[in-house]
Image 1 (cartoon, helix red, strand yellow):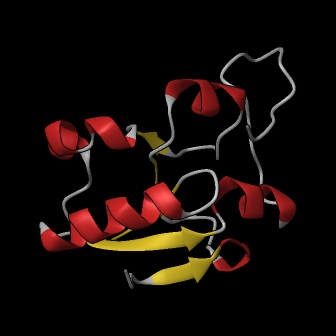
Image 2 (tube, helix red, strand yellow):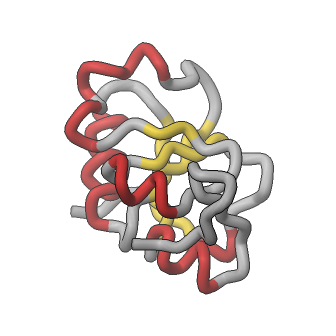
Length: 108
């Protein structure tokens, strides 16, 4: 399945970012300012997505986000997959934060 893709290192700081990982993955570490909707809830929560502009989609390694991008693009969004997911995001030195303010953020 071919979907529009960008390397994590090339994602600008001000993009709209949708994280489709599960709750435990999100809680362990996520990009600041990202919107969190697990892939399994995406179809029923479309109203929460921004209606205009590009939407970058991320998961742990890129597989779930690629499925989400294909679905979103078929339904009218301009979505782009973040290749390598949060693993590549973190490896590129991009910021991550944990949901628990006292916890050390990590990608699981």
